[in-house]
Image (cartoon, rainbow, N blue to C red):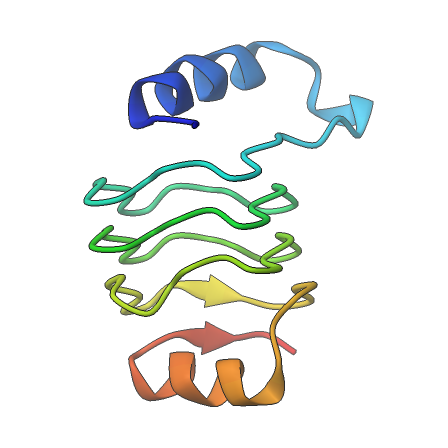
Length: 105
């Protein structure tokens, strides 16, 4: 499975390539448990089935991210920005909002 060290390597690689290429960062099934992801920009990222159990996503940007099957139940999502996310139900959105998430849609 995808681990936090792999995330750091791939994010660094992603910063190097041209952001106009429309290439989406793929973190499908990433194991991001107990990871500090404060203020990270993961917009438009494929986070399908990613596990954020115990992760700190405070202030992170997840607009346009694919969140189908992602585990966010025990993540700190205070001030985390969501919007236009594939895979979130209305119930998911209400739960995330009640925990401090911000939705732009």
